[in-house]
Image 1: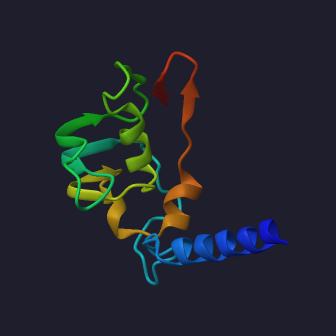
Image 2: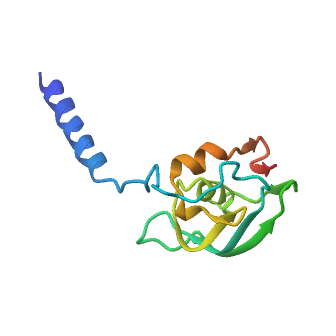
Image 3: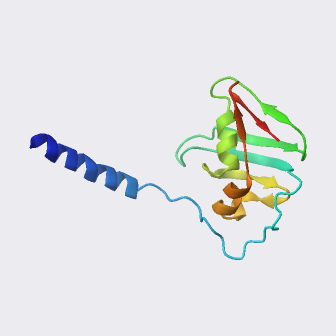
Amino acid sequence: MVSEVETNVVAVERIKEYSEIEQEAAWIVPNEKVPENWPSKGTVSFKNFEVRYHKKLEPVLKGITFSVNGGEKVGIVGRTGAGKSSLTLSLFRIIESSGGSILIDDVDISEIGLHTLRGRLTIIPQACSGFIFS
């Protein structure tokens, strides 16, 4: 009986913890101005981009600026902790920008709904601990 009470208390603690987690951005943004065929060119631009995993922590990526033209194949490689996964999580807005912007075909992804963004992007993780965008 004691273990059942302990299990129930832990369940209540989890519910409280999950209810206090910061919500994601809007799934759907009313009147968003994204072309139906977006993205059509596949141009990706990071402009002075910065991201952190929590507002009280230091940025894990700072001042990232680069562009990839549509049709180009780019490999992102680096040692553990270099920021490869953080770049990918940022593209899908699983972690939100704390500065700068990401543009895909000249659309600032911070201004569109997560459903539109995540429903129209694809990424193929590679076994070599890197990513290839195509």
